[in-house]
Amino acid sequence: MELGLYSFGDSSIDPATGRYVPEHTIYKNLLERIRLADEVGLTSFGVGEHHRVDYPLSAPVTVLAAAASVTSQIRLGSAVTVLPTDDPVRVFEQFSSLDLLSDGRAEVTLGTGAFFESYDLYGHDRTGVQSEFTEKLHLLRQLNQGGQISWQGKHRPPIDVPGVWPRPMDGALDMWVATGAIPESSTRAAELGFSAIYSFLGNPPAANAHLVDHYRAEAVAAGHDLSRLKVAVAGRGLVSRDSVHAAETMYRHWLPSVVKASEERGRPMPDRDLYEEQSTGIGPIIVGTPHEVADRIEAIHDSLHHDRHILHMDIGNVPHIDVMRSIELLGTEVLPQLAHLGNVTARV
Image (cartoon, rainbow, N blue to C red):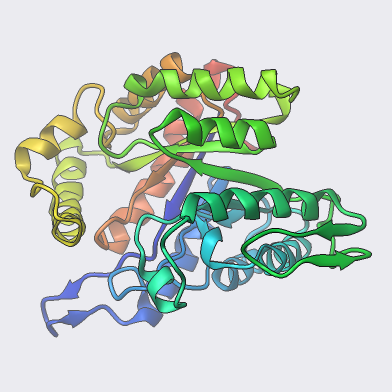
């Protein structure tokens, strides 16, 4: 198993100004976090694509290219790239370029997006999203395989070219698909031979073991080698020497972020009771001391046997000092405590 992080470049209202924190501050902090994650031996850092004031990070590959210049080992990828509103050829070219700049450390996670802002911004029809996503995954897989590209579909002009360049450093990109809560989503990723990442933000991760089992069974049925496919789990979390500090800090920034999302989607308003339910026991929010966080991740691993666990530490713009300390503890203390699982290894 691997430990990593992901971020949407979360911003928040600065009480001193009544305005959102300047984007250049958000970007500066994000690069410092990625650099530290590399230094303490974490495996990956994913940057999400959004087009909104509270998540002011619309061009992940640009930020990741900057991160490649200040890191040496950590894998750099998207979390996620909204494929239905993008062109698979352009996505492949951009991440292949990142792969070359980072000496083979690029990866891409593909999804339909948690929000619809990119669909509206680019004048993209929201109907038929799943069909378009599936079609573009097929094209991206063909692009990743290399060679002559002869392809046609319903959602973009046909292609008939001898190849697409540049090629990734090792010939192919590491590609993941963000899967949903329905088995069909897992089936699609498995049949196409993409690694799968599950964002269990509301339900306990262990309660979704059937989805992970379904993905692996479908991958085998499709003739894929499971040793070449990975399963990742994404969730929110924060590590601190003081368990109460970790829980309270996460709550103060989690609440306004999820309230805003709930208002936009017409969902019931989250509250303290929901937070307590999600951040204790087998819930999806992992907060506490290094020992507590390690125990929670190990318990999830016992149920899902996943290969990678990534945490969203800066939801709602958790203070930079708290995020930096959390990253340090995740790499220097949580990761070694998980080494006995066998497939969690700290780099030297």
